[in-house]
Image: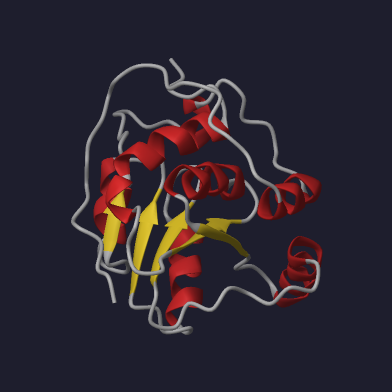
Length: 189
């Protein structure tokens, strides 16, 4: 049975598990393109934090997406800042590992990986590369990220561009109550 109506609903629920980030010294939220951006947008809105998009793929596609998503704006500076890296789910953790590695080069104070759903073993493995992992729902068996959403249609480039530059809101609700909290206090600079 799905836990979330859509990615926005998942982000609103995830924001509730990240309340300690509200009011911290200049943290920033990055959404992993593309599916993680709607989740990250709801988190950023819910916590009143800055939002940016992270593209960690092949170079040509990276350059195209950065031009498209940012519209000429530079990437948010992360040096010395606490970074909250958000995706729509953590299946194997491969894409989020690549995203963490890309962010580490920018020298943030800390990187917290956050996703609304993922297998417990993936969350545990990600603790080796991230400073913290927040994943409130770790169903067993896991199956796939999309299995936990009523609406898991693809997020388009246009959707990402609209979310990175536009305000949003929490309009949907979570389904079910299976939860596992795998979080420590954020490491502020």
